[in-house]
Length: 309
DNA sequence: AGCCAGGCTCTCG
DNA sequence: CGAGAGCATGGC
Image: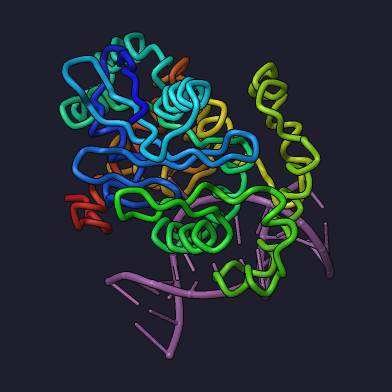
């Protein structure tokens, strides 16, 4: 079987990182974790590659192509996995800053080594963010899974069916009724298909957007119907790996910050933005990821409504 | 039963 | 400008 070894950065908690990616529930959308092995199907041009990644000793992750492939496929898969798991991000400055943040540093035991995982493409992050607008994360995950399993490309590995995220063409060409059957609102169907059309036309090419500043990306993305600031900021964090973006309009983020820092007093978007700048810059994006991971773990542990004491 | 969820657009003063 | 309605649906 085709395999190679990838060096992990420091710090890196591999199991925590892949758990975060699946909402600590084993499977979420295109991502699957079984017994410490992360399964993911990705696209390389017209091909779909099945990949596994698992810890293979201290500081090492073993990457395999369980269904085979060329050595160029393996090199591509390895590079993609390092991107998905954000192995290139330097966390030490963020951890130093946590020393001055009594709240986030309290989470350090639980979160140390968490890497700010990414989507495969900008298109994927856009669609997933659009699906997640306004509704609860539980409902959003359910709808996303339905979309991925209906319009994605299946591959079977070790008895598990993996799905590569749907192509822009597959969503754009889909009958709106089949999207509606996956419980997407008719408005969001318009947004998602409009995004898919732009993606198919090559509008979200990674390298081009990666060269722009945070605000330039926001300015470009919010021109798209259905994409507001929150969605654009989410794409910056999830797809482009920006580490200093704070989606201050996010309701769940406002509430968790309110709980943890303001004795549950309500804070608005402006107040969160000001607080984030003073408290977490230049690592506001990493702080966001860590706070959401905290929420995901708390929810997975069965305490979704956490009443502050 | 009804209200709320990790927003956004559209309409109306 | 700001405020308010409508969207979809699982969970409480």
